[in-house]
Length: 607
Image (cartoon, rainbow, N blue to C red; front, side, top):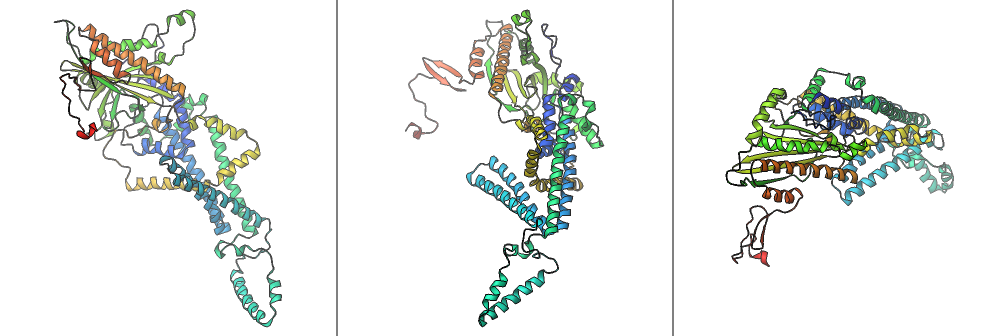
């Protein structure tokens, strides 16, 4: 449906589902931050690819203030970049193993333990417990200390400080062992002959690493130690190269200036037949007023439900013969102009010429229809064309069904599309009753680390050489584990494609929203205040519009006004009052006959 223009507001936003809204979403700041997040967080990148690309039998969740197709293209590009760097790191590790033998595997071990400790940290956050946190802490610091010790040993050997240069000579290991055994026998014999002092003098040869390590774990010789250090330096170069590549990406393709030019985005150019099909489906579904949903997640994509409420009032005629039939469409038509008035600028501000930046000026109103995904054999069968939507809208407005539902959708976006408040309104009249359903939802801001990506990486690029070296050294330890995880995930995805696990014959509704996956658990105090202001303003106008529709149709409005005051503000509705006796709650009745109603919990409740 088209959004009506209020006369004082010629700059009213485009209605939902129009090309103008889709283009604005593709260039929004929220889209840019989500695209940057696919390079920062590999777990988020994998979730995006799994949700939008691998599980292509599911329709996409509605996209409020962002474009899911651009997020997917950047997620796939980020995966290609990560795979290339992972292959480079793995190749360097293979070269190191070939050059130094088992010592490179020993050097890699602390990095794998650090990767394991990072997973343990996430488990500790998801299911907090003192023992789990202590285990993660101990594993992390053990890995760091072990890595430091191994690097020092390697440097010690490379500098030739050790007094036992032939400890790990590949040609003399067995001979040294035999010689040691023979020397022990001679020492015993010499001790028996009284010549033990000479043997003790011969054994005073200094510190030997062989006394601390098993034969298979002996430190490398000087050449192998230098080769191991060179491999570590090459790993550091890979880590630094990846960081600098991301900095360059943020300064070019993901900068606010370049990102707004969609045609100049390199991630939009790479196309495969399957990817092109998926992107077409996403762009036709994400901003459509027709919402295909899963029964368990009807409002997927709208964010967190925020105190939904409903009420029912009896349609009592104000005077006999005054009431006339009133339908759902008539009530919503009466509500809509009052909501649109929220876009109007105050008279004093308009007269004085002061700029007004209240986000309510960009309030969006449209009508949407929710349809279940069950029963469709293919994703393309979803009726997203305009004619089908109008047919469903006309039938769903008055039928009041369970599966197909019609809503008036009001949306306010703030904080650069980072905070989205959506209110779904449904009205149903049946059996001389009017039912009003209001379902507010809040899409919270994008994750703080995604927002801070520019500052963090610019700080890495602008820091001095010593600071860069320290930063790279801390990241080199986790590079092997991260590379193996990336390649393992790629191998698992390839295996699923080969075995047909990704082929889904049955379509389904959206399971996740990539925007909700990247949302903060809560907003700031200013953002909370804005959400409260938006919701109170919208809900007040909804109630006033319904009240006006009832009054114009000749029905009483006192009961409706009383219930709205209590229910919309989270209060308890007093259903009836008889001789100063209150009945609280739904279906409650007051009585004054002196009889005490039995407690539902039995006699024990009176003790």
